[in-house]
Length: 387
Image (cartoon, rainbow, N blue to C red; front, side, top):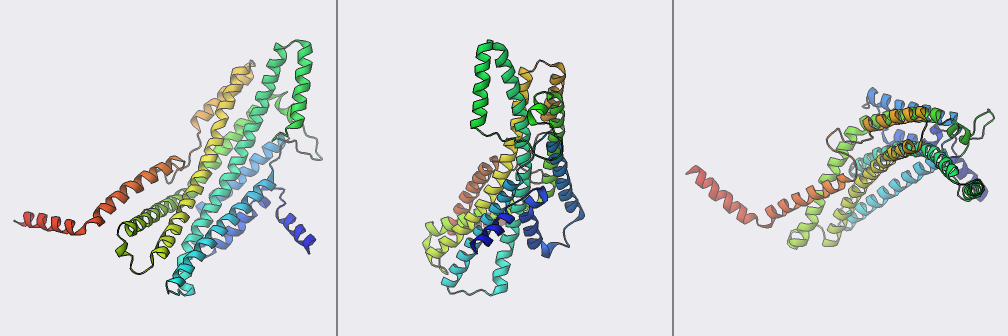
């Protein structure tokens, strides 16, 4: 029995192509969005298919360079993300149901499903965004490793020219020993077809490798643009809803702390637990979106620094011309994720939400702290206006 379970787990976590690596994304999207399948537009489906097709083209370019993406890690990331979001929703919904039962409220299946469905749909959309952004981020990382290999070849060449012949032999042996001790990220792809090795492709012909890197960066920027178009309005709705829930949950908790007499229906412990768990759920949702965008942007921004390091070391005019073109492309095509163009989806959003929530909390608490004074002032101002 254990052997059968191990074989089943091995089959589920084995992936050899991009389609198999995003199986959890496909299955969860089909299950979660089945009630809304008819409302989805052809434009959104076309954008999603374009992202997958461009990913296929990028993988083919990597294969032509003797490299292959580790699809098993992508599949494990998808499974881990789906299980984490599922566990988060199970814990949150279980706590909410137990709090209602402890308060003497027994919601029906339809009522509780109505309460749980928006959270599940938000989790499914966040899961799709995290998986697709992770696919793009891994390809940016692999492209940067190609550029690092070209940079290391130039550094080896410079060090070899500066050292004497005896020291050069010792240096090369030391480099080979260090390479054997630390495994590299890029590994040659073993296939039956004759294919050039990574070293011969990148180090002996860096101009061809840089041309392919330019094409890869262009395709990856296209994928990021399609991701932004596909998730633009869903991310705007999720961020807006999360901000409102976080704001009012904080307000209810602070109001109950400042004025305990207003907690009448629920007991204080149940009141705090419900609103705190709800606030925590939406905070985690925003953090997942922000971290997914920030990691992808940070990985894409590493390319410019590596390119300029190669440009400072290279003396070949053709390679320098190719590097200048790539540098110009990097300056004009920056990876940015926005919510319908209104604000950027990066770590600055956390500071913006914190500042806005603090400001509105202060205003709400001031309005609720002394309502009698406000009624008296409003009545006097209205009487003055009438007179």
